Amino acid sequence: MSMAYWLFKSEPNTWGWDHQVKKGAPQEWDGVRNYAARNFMRDMKVGDLGFFYHSVDEKRIVGIVRVAAEAHRDSTTDDERWECVDIEAVKPVPRPVTLDEIKATPALKDMILVNNSRLSVQPVTDKEWKLICKMGEVVD
Image (cartoon, rainbow, N blue to C red; front, side, top):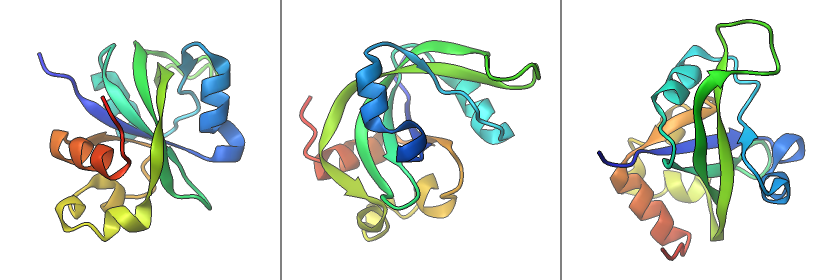
């Protein structure tokens, strides 16, 4: 079975890459109240990788995270409809990739981030993952 790739969006002042790294352990990706985003988290498997994206003013991919726990009840609510995964920091993106750069890259024109920038959790294709890693100077 192949690995899937994802993108997790967060406001850097609420929960940014530095918070994720400093935590040094898996963190619930909690507070998601969008059915599509929740359903994507239900599809995630332990070991899947994701981009950590700073929204609001920055609008750029700054890090890579790994799914550390599959979807489970979101501890921040009593509403059973909401679930989340746990993620952990893997490594920073050496040269953060901006939304403007992604939008200016024809091969990324179909990326969900380009067409539905409000969705907080979204899938990334293998092709998109490889290209953005190259743009961000990520070395395996």
